[in-house]
Length: 165
Image (tube, rainbow, N blue to C red; front, side):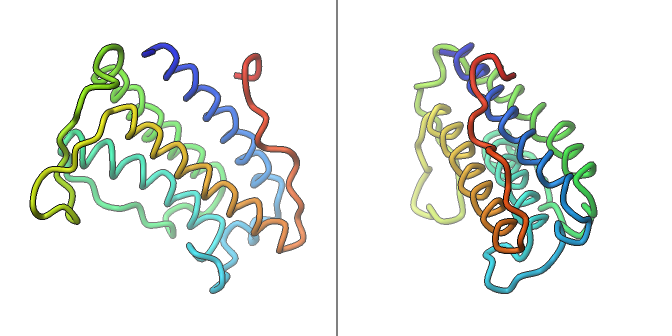
């Protein structure tokens, strides 16, 4: 299953590439345009939030690292967001799958999270990977919806799969 998780994350990265390519095609100001009716304020906010989720769960909660939240204002263009994923998120996922892959994917993992004051939050590494990936796709949907609302209909961004990585 370890290799399957790496292959699946490869598909996630291919889909993300499609989303970032779409964002690169937009006028620069569209990426940062604030919308109060949009949950994370802007496309940039949603994209940086996705990276934050991976880092919060994997680096902070699993590996116990003291990592601050990313400030979306530090990412003014798609190239900087692409670099964020390539230099921070992807290596972190690789590290996580190396540490918790194979037979350990289904093993219970005790995590300490702020909302579970009475004891550890127990999930499997597979649950964590599923969570961060579905979280990414949730916000990916928000980004393409916002693009559509702003008059920039996106191309197909969901069909990355075998043969596209």
